[in-house]
Length: 157
Image 1 (spheres, one colour):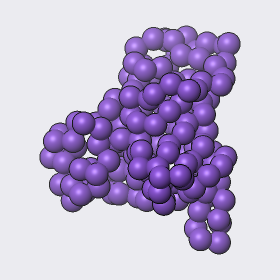
Image 2: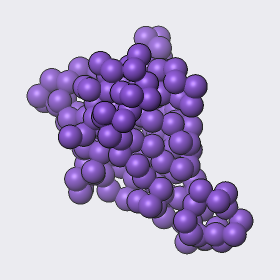
Image 3: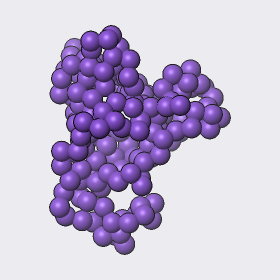
Image 4: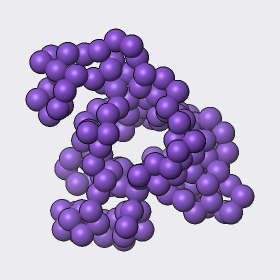
């Protein structure tokens, strides 16, 4: 696995061979994109995935380990806390969708040294690092002052 700029580790496992032409995509995209991509994503202990956003919807799938808390700030500025895991009686979901162009971050529900979370992330149109924006904590706090605490905790420095 490779280090991810947002934190944690990733390995791309699928990239569709079919391409969506640039002219048929929304103007926010800088070029053609694969139909779909998928990665394994791993967080260990106190690692976190820092606030970031992408241009496509992202479907998260839980595979193994500790549950994840995923924090999403939607376009209206509301903070939603999702719980990705297999304990549905405790309100966890085995998969969930993060809407395109919304800020989100994640960390283990129980960030103990030996804990980990292995998840999958599927993106369509397919992921391209040109579509990825890592949050600047100061800018994000100015935009969403009600969420300063979580932004300070979960921004990559």
